[in-house]
Amino acid sequence: MAFRSIILLGVIVLTVAAAGAPQVYILSSSDGPTFSYYGDFYVDWVTSPVVSVFLEVTVKDADGVQTVIGSISNISGLEWHNVTMSASGTIQDRYYGGYNVSVPEDGHTYEFHVKYYASDTLGNWNTSNTTHYYISRSDMWRVPNTIVTGLGILGSTSVVVVVLIVVLRRRNR
Image (tube, rainbow, N blue to C red; front, side, top):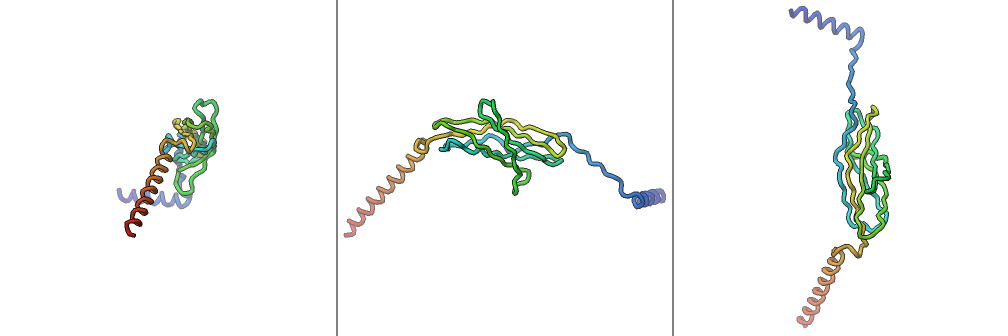
């Protein structure tokens, strides 16, 4: 029995030596890329009427990722704007893109829908779930209590320090 195994092994070795190594076939997936590490974004208190919306998503595929597109629309969803995204130079499978949106009125929060599309190197596509991007627009001087409180604390502290200096100088005379 051992003799037969040695002869069979010898035949295999001679066949590989004469004909070359057998071809290995790797099965490819018919599934499109998968998305992760994306979701709703909140940007509060911008003061400019035009704001850059930064899109970011992680996209993976065993066959390699070919194209990643971010798509953004205002809440009505009537008009979508596509952004071809770029691979990160430092974070594997991470893609970034940006698009300027209009947020014209102070005191309003604007909601945008975001979707991602990606294809692998075999041409298989996939679409992410829809996420949301919220931007609140406010005039810097109308930000509720933040600036007013900061100025109040700064002014009050300054007054207390000046009064202490004056009292201590008069006392030391």
